[in-house]
Amino acid sequence: MRPLPIRLRVAAAFALAMLLVLAGTGAFLYERLGSDLSNALDQDLRLRAQDLRALVEDPRGSLAGLSAAPLVENGESFAQLVDSSGRVLEGTPPIQSKSLLTPAELAGAKQGALYADRPSVPGLDEPARLLAVPVLRGNDHLVLVVGATRENRAEALGNLRNEFLIVGPIALILATGAGYLLAGAGLRTVDEMTRRATKISAERPGERLPVPQTRDELERLGLTLNEMLARLESALERERGFVAEAGHELRTPLALLRAELDYALHHAESEEELREAVRTASEETDRLAQLAEGLLLIASSDQGELRLRREELAVPELFESVRNRYLWRSEDAARRIEIDTPTDLMVMGDRLRLEQALGNLLDNALRHGKGTVRLEGRSENGTVELHVHDQGPGFPEPFLGRAFERFSRADEGRTGDGAGLGLAIVAAISRAHGGKAEARNEDRGGADVWIVLGSN
Image (cartoon, rainbow, N blue to C red; front, side, top):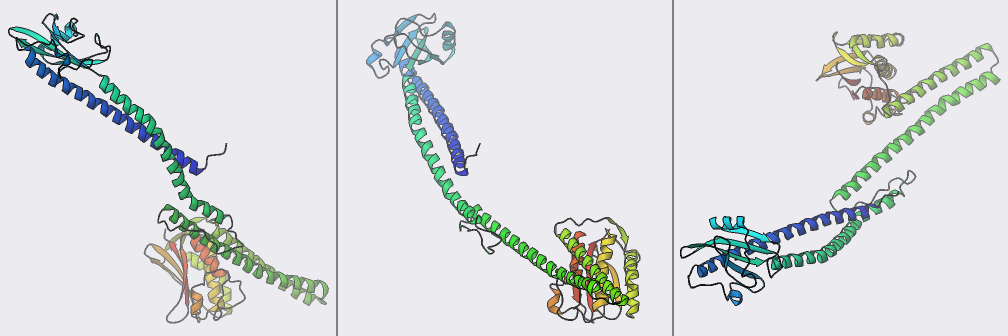
């Protein structure tokens, strides 16, 4: 079953809320008016009883003939005087002879004022309200009963109920229509956003959703969605650049590999030439494998899937392991690799990944730097910094801001035949450890590249 449109759901919710408000308001007003009318009737009976008490306590006074007087309205109010035994002494038509009080009510009325309700009274056949009060005529203790029908109250409440039944549905219909129109006006902007969103695609960059200048939730929604589109567009551009650069970088070793194999297959005339072609092909294969591994590592890091086997590592041992791997290269270049770190410095991390990151930094220092390479470990504000210093020309200043971007190479000072992934891999491994990678040129010359990790 297809759900109702939001506009109809909003209008239905608005109608339900209005129905509850109207019903609650109507019930409150109905009960309040009924209570006020009952209080007014009781007040009228008290006033009438006071006036008639003065009349009947006079030995010469009588209830006879009051039917046309202001104190008793014919057909609506009445009065009756009974003795202590319940016998009717006087009364207004048409209830002169029959007592209106039960024995229990008569006993209670002798002690003080007593109210009572009757579904009907003789001769009127309408609901009525009674007030019985004790009176004294000479030495006789009597009871005065005054009453009035509740027809006026019932008529007033009936008129109010009829007005509610007429006005309520009209108000409900108008409120529902207004809710539908207001919901439509509010959702018109959403409809426009939806139409524009269907036209946005990767082939049409730069398009954004319309943002209403309403300073409300819709404006914030539009701004948030446009910011999201900008981030997605930027990420898409980076991925496209990554794919293009990766394709370019892969093309070169593949072309060289194919050329060397073709040469070995068709043109090598001696064993020496064949061995040289195979050796070159092997080097290009290694380069291709390293490039593929770097691309896979960066892709896994971008997707948050670079798995680590964390353990507590001693930084001096970590540095010593990396130095031993590159010791032959430093000896061939007549350069030294020094280690400067506290002997008790520890770090939590993946040994293989950290050695890979430090190896890339050390490789860069040996390839592009000069002089002694120093591996330094230090503890700073609850973190561990692993530095690689060299004494070369340093980074070109424009390159420092993008040193850790993938496929980035310096225009001078640190150019080479690499793919531009070494420092990007360092940054990816640092981020996977919850840290970061940084680089700077030292004042005394040379470059300082380091990674920041949490301590154990």
